[in-house]
Amino acid sequence: MKHHENPDLLPPEIVHTDALKPGAPDFVETPDIEPLSQDREPFPVWLYLICGFALFMTGSSFTGFEIFGQGLYDQGPGGPALASGSSTQTAEVTDPLVLGKKVYNNNCANCHHADGMGQPGTYPSLVNSPFVVGNKDRLAAILLQGLAGPLTVNGGTYGSAVMPAWKSSLTPDKIANVMTYIRASWGNKANSVTEDEVTKASAKFASHANAFTQAELLQIAPDGPDPSDKK
Ligand code: HEC
Figure 1 (cartoon, rainbow, N blue to C red):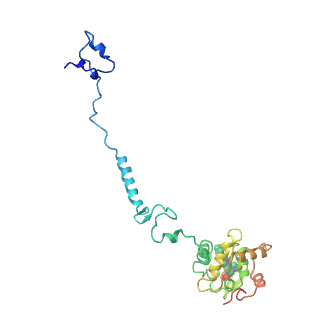
Figure 2: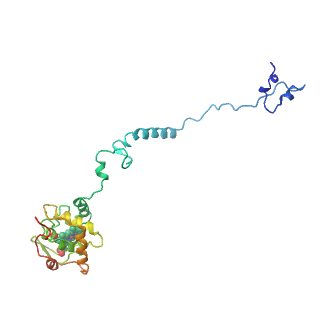
Figure 3: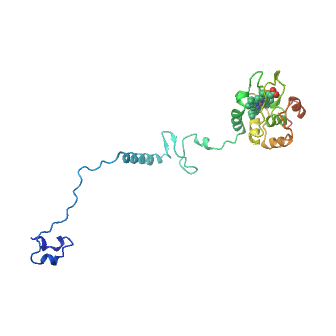
């Protein structure tokens, strides 16, 4: 059959009535179609990697993003449970002994050492010191305003170095926690200290501009347990 007999096969620009005219070409070339390129681009490597990672994350979502034992995402309360022990990591620490130990290690241990023993002749020991386990106001006075001058504790004499004041660098709750910690560590057994007690002591000693001396401390209270410390 001749090409032009079926008007559907003609390109749209050729109206079939034209094709029927005498002398009309009985063959119309159809426009060239771009041949398929032979050298097609390979599937890019980065796409492989992205697909792989997506699959990996999908899989790990079944375990709460617990990958190689490491919780990638903590999805918070209601989310999948994370590794054992992580609940204790995220729980807020409120134990004054734990908080106080942190304050101590960050601020006091470089002089009084982690074991509280200090340095003979330079930094007095806090172990079994009447200033540590005794009256709380007295201990608060040392921490808030500092301590200077000759000092005799448990048979050792000191005075070559100064105990810094912490009033401006540690908040009352931190001072209370570190007091609680040193009163209950290394064999010391005195009762805990509250933030309120430190705030009250701070107001009481606010007019005392300089570091305390041993004589002034003994005027605050003599040696012996704090009145609140009923053993
Ligand atoms: C830069 C070193 C240094 C740092 C840091 C320091 N102290 Fe002291 N501390 C001393 C010195 C020195 C004395 C003795 C001062 C004197 O001889 O008059 C002392 C004395 C004391 C005393 C009284 C003496 C005793 O043996 O009981 C206490 C209590 C005390 N420090 C607690 C602390 C606490 C708690 C911290 C941390 C918040 C701390 N100190 C940080 C140097 C330091």
